[in-house]
Image 1: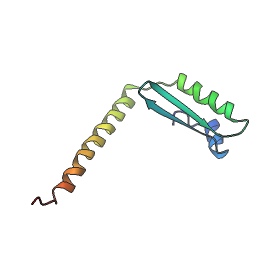
Image 2: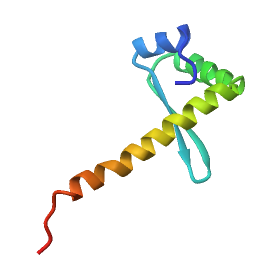
Image 3: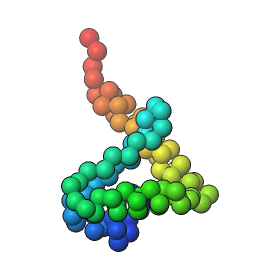
Amino acid sequence: RLCADRHTYSALVAELSYTLSVTRTGLTLNFKGFTHKLRKLIATVLTNMKNFSVTGAELEMVRQQMIRSLENSRLKPAAVGGSCVRI
């Protein structure tokens, strides 16, 4: 999550939640919950998104994780397919 701080922790305890999704046209934020604290959660998430920054080292770490994930996904079908016999 983008903003794991004291505000969002309190929101989770109060059964408030949010999701961030990537769509063809951009980003979608969904907030769920029924409480007077929902407005505070929205403000906190939006503020943290506005102030979000990433370092080159963090970007490289994510890139390496994605590469490993792609390589692992390519290995799985080959291992399963190797035990098949075609007639």
